[in-house]
Length: 215
Image 1 (cartoon, rainbow, N blue to C red):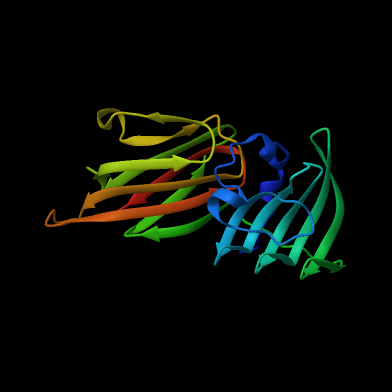
Image 2 (image 1 turned 90 degrees about the vertical axis):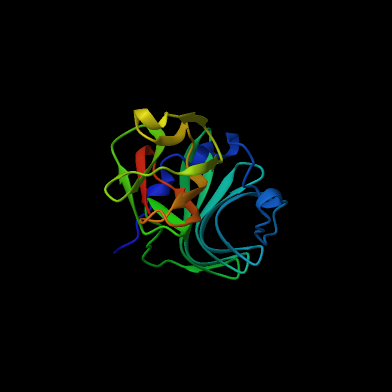
């Protein structure tokens, strides 16, 4: 599947989000000559590694693309941000923070699942425009009777529907990219034991999303 740059739609608003996933708090560092900034993406051993978005502290520039050991490395795009509008400055290949030239670009999907533990399968569906993320929990073809549910998102207002109304929980008025972690306990299909579930996802493209977890 070809990777697409859905995350560019509202990245200029990242500077106004909570700093829950800033370099200092998520312990994920971008090695750059600048004085710091906000990184959202994948990490390895405390350094930006993989696909992500780095918005410089002054808010004037952002890099969207690939990182390796904390440095811009691979395919990417560098933007200048003026009054909320993005202007493409460079597009191509970086190596150890240095721009090497133009190349065809393939960038992140609309979402990326970072971790799943004890999840049999899942579906991620965009239902149209909006800024809402909703989680559903199913087992054996029906709603799952989970316990100790915790949903942690990095922006937006948390909401919860009672189990009788649909067994769902999520966030609305979110800003993108949106990073979320879900943990809960669930019985197995035969109701003979209970185990812990963990699911982490980053959603890059704005919209109204429904995520269903099956156990």
